[in-house]
Image 1: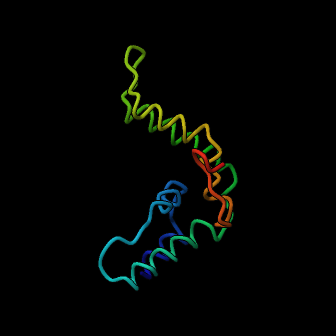
Image 2: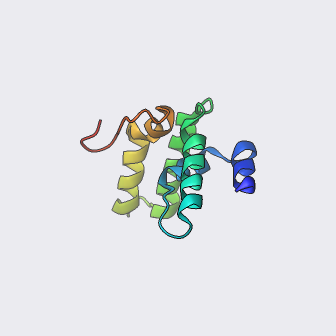
Length: 111
């Protein structure tokens, strides 16, 4: 746990902070799982986003669309293109990390 905390305090990138949004305990040592979830929540919501975070999130989602979707002019991968479009063009792309966990929800029907 100490290494996890140290890494996220000193070296973690913005995309890693976003990935922590999916962090959930599913099996194993329940107290440790809850400790990991709480620590992840602190890294996500306990500090402001870095300057220019919205631009970085958009850049990463665009890259994902191109690389994972294998986009070409004559072929559009709807699965990845749609996911990247929704994430990069919706308020949710920065909303989750920037509301400091105040119970606000974003997404279909939750805006």
